[in-house]
Image 1 (tube, rainbow, N blue to C red):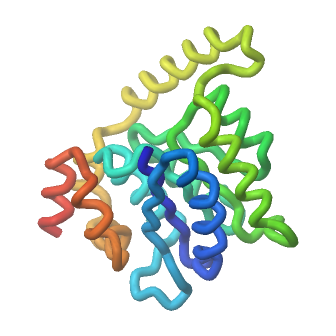
Image 2 (image 1 turned 60 degrees about the horizontal axis):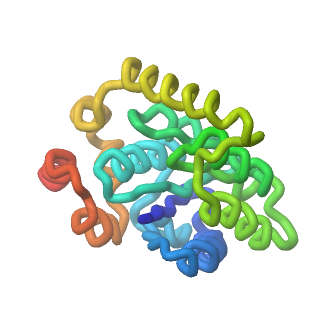
Image 3 (image 1 turned 180 degrees about the vertical axis):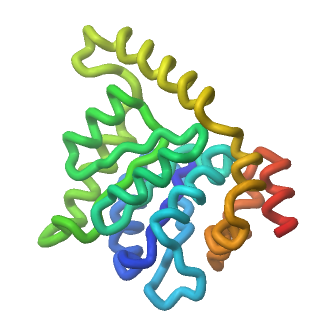
Length: 210
């Protein structure tokens, strides 16, 4: 699985902490981690939590990533922005219990975490425990197990409802504020990470044309 990491400007200084925690769990499990930044507060390309959501939509809908790990000060803004995108199902994860239940019940493709609120002593251990609960178990197995069938049915209904309420990603890219879009993909490693991994040529071509 390709896991994309996205962090917004207010928490950019913590990129190394979050990236190290994520890779220490995901890589031994056979996953790839692609760090889309921000990398430092001084990066020329600055991401807001709104851009986090737009970038998550681009990566997941194009197939350049299979799962997105994002966040902001509280995790709320990035979660809301990500969930505004077609095909993105993002949960707010604060602790390992959140991570486990989101994985087993909702089986989404993105999580948003708070990197300021409650981010204190041993925060990196909480991050590792959360990532472990997401990536070491098969998603969607259900909890409690006897309700797995009902949970799977609800996920399918939610997916259909989101398809009915959202436009496709290419239409989103064409109609969203183009300056906002350009800023969201302006990261120094975006082209290096995105274009070799994107599976939707129409999305890739549109972004290249910008």
